[in-house]
Length: 87
Image (tube, rainbow, N blue to C red; front, side):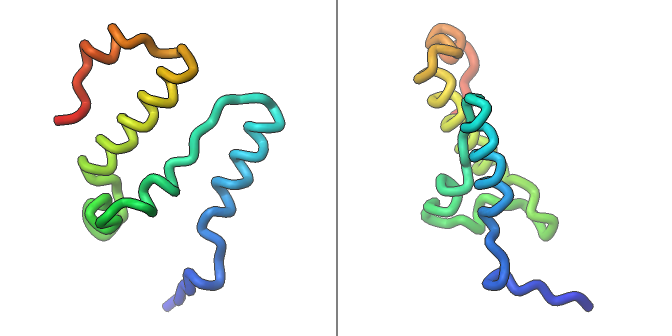
């Protein structure tokens, strides 16, 4: 049995590394980890033991990414209005 001690590992390290590279290369990027970590019930964002994203987590990610793309003018409002993701 291999024991994993989450206190001994920085779970944000891979994301931080990627975000730093994206910033260096001037690539727009978004970190969803804080969004999920600050959720009122983070465990509800997983489906099953394999830690797959639940439908709720997928909806949150879709909203955050949509906002990110809209703020940068990459996604127009007319397109967003035709694809409802909040259900």
